[in-house]
Image (tube, rainbow, N blue to C red; front, side, top):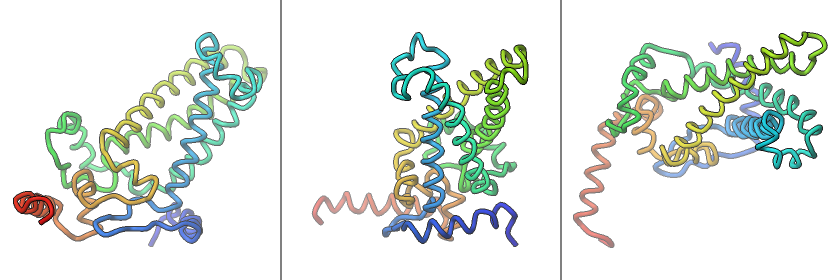
Length: 252
């Protein structure tokens, strides 16, 4: 029996799957459905609109060239909170969409204790305990979730300064800016890992698919779940296939 979050998301998931298609070729696995991908890019657009308009407000001496993009300083100030609301709203849908696979487990604690191996790429294949998301992805997910709540509370206080008073507004500015910097740092890491750090990850949010080698390398537990195959055995078979192919030479 599904949870409330599953029931809440199933109807829009099905609707988006009817509108768009995810084509899975041989040797690939479906990673993200159309609904998830659309939400991801809407959240990303609102995040960067809020970020860039916020830069122009926070440090006009350095980012004054950004405000004309939004129609000038006053217009940037007017639009910024609405961009923030859009970001928080659509992330709320993504939050419900990913709530179940983002649950924290004992395996995630073990992953974090061995994060050095992940950063230094000491192990070419992740632990077989890593399922659909690893602990690092879960940490960022919950950090964004908490950040959205902080943005909403501090943003409302700054939006209506006459209601909450000077001290509350001053404190909110500091907390708001610190939260934005933390989230920006996480987004930089996210962009790096989804492009150069883990090639093909970006494809999972454009086409919705990944190669089987990507799956058994980065998310072995998920690979086993969806294919029923042992990820390390699949890796060894791929190595033997490539060695045999190289011994035969090109064109054979």
